[in-house]
Structure formats: C-alpha cells, structure tokens
Amino acid sequence: MASYLCLLLLAYLYPWSLIDAWRSAREPGPPSPDLAGILSLLLPGLGQAYLGLYSRGWKIWCYVAAAWTLMVSTRELGITGILSDVFTVLALSAGAAPVLSAWDAYRNAKRLRAGR
Image (cartoon, rainbow, N blue to C red; front, side, top):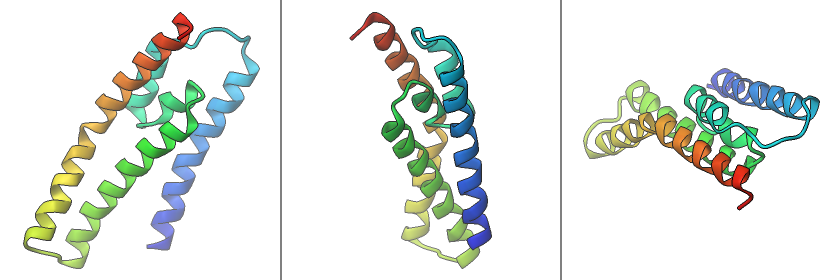
C-alpha cells in the first residue's frame, strides 16, 4: 500500500513542478484558457496549478485520488453492503471531476485574462 502512495505522490508532484518551471521560463502574459482546460482534463487540478491556483488544484486532485482509492480499497478489502455502494458513488462522481475541473480552469483563465 505504501508503494502505491509513493507512486501517487510522484505522479502528482512531477507534472506540477514541470508547470512551475514552464511558467517561470516563458514570458509573462495572460494564461491560455484552452491550455488550462486541457491540462485539467489530463490530470484534474493541473490546469488550476497552471493558473497559479495551487490550493484549488490540490483540493481537486486530493478528492479524485481519495475517491478512486476508496473504490479500489473496497474491492481489495472485500467491503460489501451499503458502505460499498457509498464508495462506488464517490468514485463515479470522481469520474466527472476531469470535466468539471477543465470547465473550472477554463472559466478561471478567462477571468484572469479579463483582469477580474
């Protein structure tokens, strides 16, 4: 289980450090709403990190990771009944998270471009 957590942490931190390096290397300007949306589709919360909204991106990513971990652990631990159904609903709602995260990143990038 610890190795899974280490892999999740590595998969989470590596793209964010690349985004930080890329943002600091390019010339300053308004963020691209399209790029923010695409990044959030690839990894929920990554588009928010691109926009500099790190805490919001972290919360989105943690929700998705926790929901999928709950779903996988229910199967591995053999949890059945109503608790299994609750965990499954949480995991299915996390399936919609990339789309909602992309929409949120796109909307926030538009706001940042407009100066609001």
